[in-house]
Image 1 (spheres, rainbow, N blue to C red):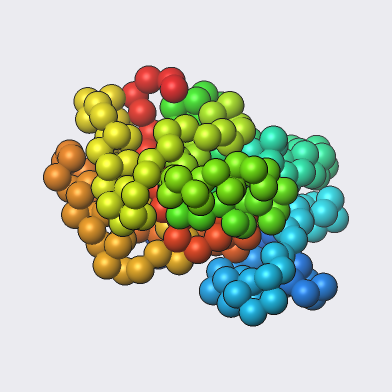
Image 2: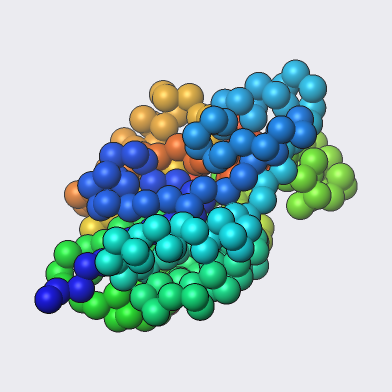
Length: 285
């Protein structure tokens, strides 16, 4: 009897409802606390709620990983339905979601937890790859092994219009924010080895900076796995997003360009007007 495989992830992978439906992905959602009220990420709170709240009272939400009991019940529900599970989490360097999921998975024989070493659709790319490998008949254990190998091939970066959210969230010093504002810098944040760091610093208007950024990231088309590429953004104008998609089309032949909105967890830390291009390379980064 063939193995019955289910691909799951936490809610930070930022896949659209259409992609989740296409690949049958189930979500373990994080908790977002806003004004001392707990909400379920993407269910009863949206990124727009976060932006509006900040604009009105200058407070940011707090995000929390699913606790051990929540993780256990999430896995139990699907294991009892006969599934082998491959579960993906945000980088263990950024959240306790991975640790809690690993502990919960120890109660079951058929749950394989993968630390994406990433965030947002950087992890989403691995979720899609896992689903495609499952469709090809690969076992759950082998899917998890292959996706762990691929974590170092995922190219994740994004440009932030303002450092204000990062500063308020304690991830950027006041001096750095002041310098960026005075010089009109738009920093590129890159993810490597499970951690975020500052890459190239652009200068100028956000919409023009994004076009330069895209050209820089798609620097070697031959080294890019073209099966899926994401433009993921937080609160950007539709015209800006469309211009970035058009620019990407001039930089290479990409059959599947997915445009997705960053979810509440990512938006809580980066704020409005953030955009990134994410893909898998053919060689480790």
